[in-house]
Image (tube, rainbow, N blue to C red; front, side, top):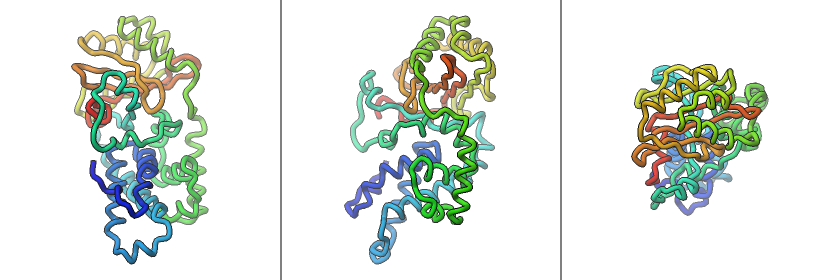
Length: 304
């Protein structure tokens, strides 16, 4: 990536926070990095006198980054109407864990994904709920409920009154009220059972690990083979997974953290080709999100 935001004027330390905000707003590491780079470019493009007038460069950068993300969210709706199949957020690896698993390690500038804090607000389940919000709702909710920015500051991002921003956040909050924000105990064991059943092509074991009403959504983006519509029902998902196993010789499944929760990564010839995130309730998988679009798997490269 570029080096904007590495200066010595006191703004460099804001970059990590801005990347965290932008990823939750956009669901894409690449777009988050671009948004933050754009914000820093605008900061350094200000005349020195104008910079000196800004009492809090961090707040200024947050406002500008938020506005850039708001514009991107607005245009994303039109882009996703043309997207091939389902669109899913870009999955985050646990970089240290990946390196220990046989990756070559990274040199040079840190990957933006390294700077994102893994918590309940970046689980795939949470990010998918965020996708259901309007752009304004998402900005108000993420800035206030996740990062605790006051509505007076959010008003500057959305160009609305603090009261209106508060209403937007409340509306967004209702959308997530039924979502479970944390990993349920035993999720790693359930995911391991899914892996073992897939490797042995055991349909009965897969069905046993899946909720009868489970849903699997895949994102290939037209660049990798993936079912275009969600697969509904534990039995249908199990049959689909076994069919994939039979057609995928040489594919290795690895247990890895995906967005901070237990998931699976499929590797062929040393390259990550699929990342799967899971939602588990009462010991059964209720949702599976499968990302195969190679553009969304760049952070999973073993070369960093």
